[in-house]
Amino acid sequence: AELQLLSGVHFDLMCFHPYKTVLSYTNDLRSFLKSERGRALATFPGEDEQQHQQPQQKKRPIVGEDLRPMHDDARRIVDDAVVSDIPLLYSPGKIGLAAMMVANENLQKRIKSERGENDSTAGDGDSEKSKRHVIPTIDLLGYVRVRFENYPPEDVSKLLGQINVLCEMLRGLKEGQYNCGNHGVELDKVKVVHKKLKKCKAWGIMKKSGGGDSASGKKKKKKKKRKAEDASDGNIGEGNSDVPPKAKVPKME
Image (cartoon, rainbow, N blue to C red):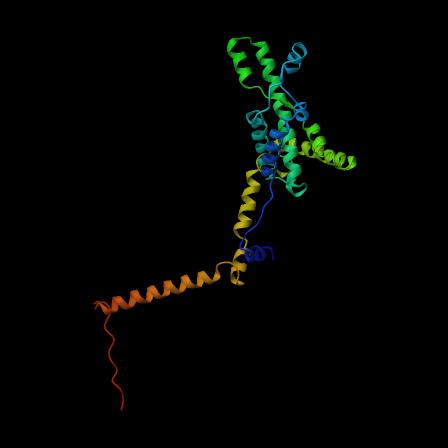
């Protein structure tokens, strides 16, 4: 029934996936963090000390390139999520937001580890490298609370609770949990499923019942039959020595 339904709409489907959610949240963050209220949710390493020493100095504005590492990491997390059971349990919007939160956490851990390595190995090259890879710390939970402040508090708390559970699920995808197809896949089981799918006759049954390309297949068969008949008639007409000409039968009066 599903195959006939898809064939009836010519497989013209509108798919909602978390990739667009990640892009939309990134664009909204880029504009929101430029405001005074949004800029308070993002801090660069060492910025608080500079503000304490020089209160009159303005904070560095957030640009699009500052959000690129989080966007790219979130897309990689979504790559694992879409081949798991998670899209069957949560909506694309929640998956995209949770992927950005997990990506932000991973970036902060990476920054701390790199900062510790730079402190242990002092050098001009390391200091220049750390300056080139400055990534802001963004309070995404605060961002969600501000963006949904017009909604009832119980709805916002319920949403954040679901996002926290979803973040834990996304962290487990690297270990092959939730049937993630990119990690922990047993090739023997995949081969068994592949053999079963090759023996599946669903597509053939659908075509015989009138769906799909059954009409075009019949036309192709007719064309091949006509070509074969034309070729055989041409060989006989050319006077082939191996095939004797047909004798004319006289009419009986």
